[in-house]
Length: 216
Image (tube, one colour):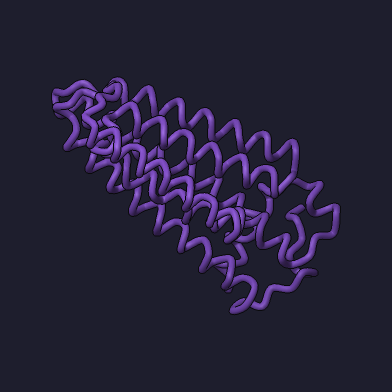
């Protein structure tokens, strides 16, 4: 209970004050906590991956410069989205914008690293799970359709032997697949853990709306 309360206070401090000022209901608070937590973890995951790639770059004797540049770009985009959320304080728009950004970035990464055979494919299919958590099941169903259609197009291009741009060094593909596998598993653990934590605050800990005040 005490640990959950401390974590909740930390997360609540990152929720824009204008949301608290609007006297939100319990559902809105839960959505805000979930969105802030997902945004935070979404920065942490590529940051850890960046550290892994930097380590591989210096200790494996291989060139991972494209991967490092890409991950830095992703982190910059995610930090920018978090700052925009702080200024707009709009849960719906931020959730939809983040979902679209997540899908577009991963689709681009998949296309430019080989398409259907890209090591990024497992991350692309994490999109509906992410969308469900931050936007809801209706948006997640749309994400499933987009993800399926994207995978189908990539598969057909592969069958037709259409060569897509390959910006990654091919000799590094096994390493890249290992990093992506780690990221995909970490994202799923993070998403399910976040859902469990938010549900625990609402049910197990029985934290009321009056007790969910922004930290002073």
